[in-house]
Image 1 (cartoon, chains in turn orange, yellow):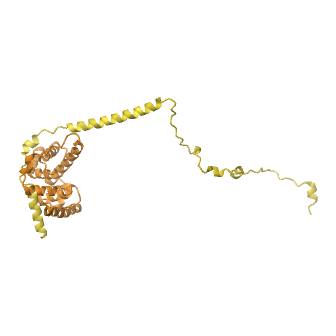
Image 2 (tube, one colour; image 1 turned 45 degrees about the vertical axis):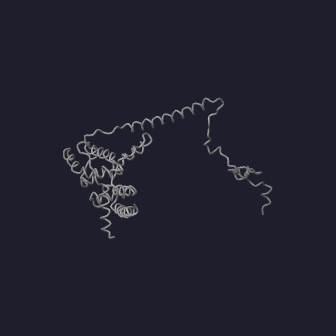
Image 3 (spheres, rainbow over the protein chains, first blue to last red; image 1 turned 90 degrees about the vertical axis):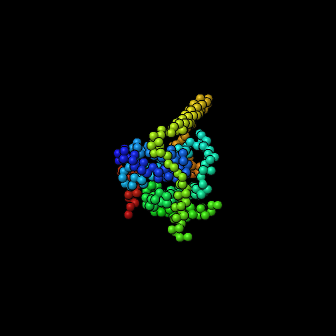
Length: 160
Length: 123
């Protein structure tokens, strides 16, 4: 794909990409913006190349997921040198109770279960495509899907 | 609840988790400069300092050991020939030489002749 075509494709999927980045970053908006920015630069610089083996959206979501993992690893090495930013006091107020409750439940799920559920139920992927995004076999993705559903329903049921 | 109702519940939950997500403007996000890479530099500096300190310590230990008067260089006998089993004393018995040596016999090429006096006594 040429640069203008790539740029257009990125812009087309920008909204869902941001939602996916939010999921990969535990709903931390600032981190999600950084991750998305880095992922776009990778695509536009040619460090991440689209080979056409899957749909553009599937490939882009895999790039965003890998970039988020790199950011998490970098943050792990960085934690000792700078204190983590304190949550803004208005954050909790901004979020509705329901949203906070669901986000907390999602945060308690294992990452792969959370990712598969988000891809299937929010982003509209099939389980097979979700397996491609997170880089696991279809069978493994189905297991994460089933277990994730059961775990999320249980967590939502337990939550006050 | 049926499986379909469970799916609907999860779908609604995820939509509520993503509610009011306003993505940043695409052009602004792409045009934004890269975040500072200072943390990586600090990490590289810290690991470099740690390596240098470890190398200095190793050098100091070796140089101090060599400078110590009367210190003998540590030698380790790796030869198996020099090694003695702790039970070797059990083999120290009288006549050990006879047990561990092989006797040799002189072999003559000629067949000795029978003395004449013995030859006569033959039937």
